[in-house]
Image 1 (cartoon, rainbow, N blue to C red):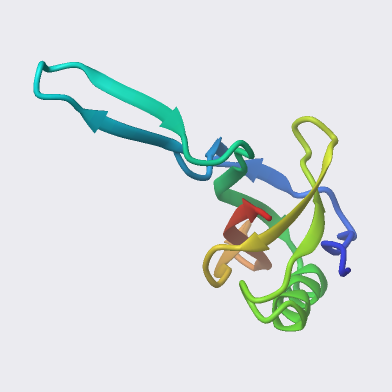
Image 2 (cartoon, helix red, strand yellow; image 1 turned 180 degrees about the horizontal axis):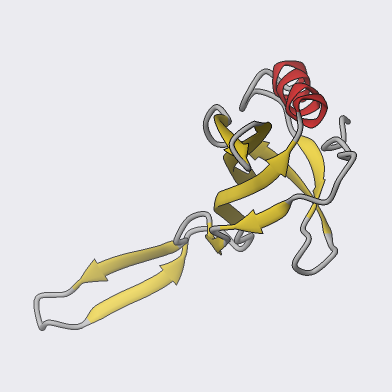
Length: 120
């Protein structure tokens, strides 16, 4: 299984969002106004959204872009280490990665990439 690439620098992470991927609750409303609930399934996966790596150079952008092609955007799963808890997860991309070109000090080209992940 592929592993998310190791970058040449540690990028700044902004826009961190983490949540459950789905709500497993089945809910039935009774005529008396009560609700009966149960879990449809027992495994509750996570998703991470709006993860943004900024301050990346062309080489790191190319590395992530090539990796996105390797896993065919959201088709294949891969191993990703969450920088918040240092745990490894098997994930896939929820959508294509977004790349934004910025300039530091007016002439130094840098990239910001943002993506969303879902635990498999």
